[in-house]
Image (cartoon, rainbow, N blue to C red; front, side, top):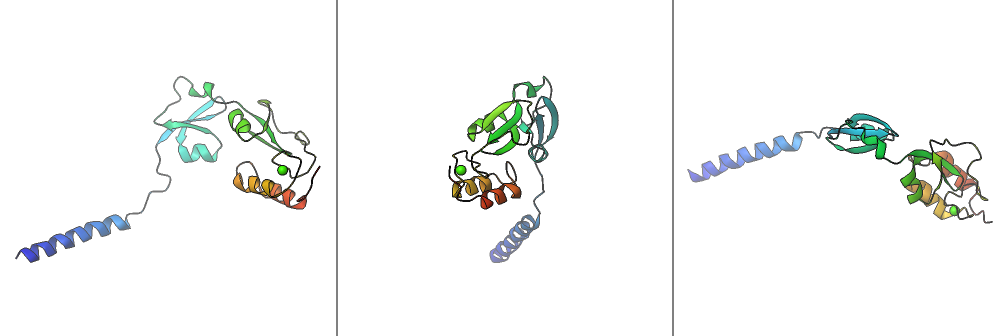
Length: 156
Ligand SMILES: [Ca+2]
């Protein structure tokens, strides 16, 4: 008798484990919070905020009291010859040359002696490829990678 109970108990446990194992994870399952785009605040999920380039303030935060007033300003940032509109803190943390709040990227604004020199050291080499790959899809795209490859070996 006890063996039969143990067998039934094990069967019940296995059924529960199997049910848990086949329960799919819910995609995009994150709580909502305030998302800042410059001074503009909107409550979104983290995923939506990240994808749209916003600054997520945390789960459960709201736009009450305008929490976006205190975030880093957006502006043009030169990293070598590449220009992206990003936050001030991010620009300085990656060694970029901040162009000012609310500035836009203008062709030729960011100069380097070597095209493709995204690290700003006047050389286009493997460090530039690694920098582009490290920030691919965020600061750089395939055009930046092709520019580095086309000018690989440039030294001033
Ligand atoms: Ca370089």
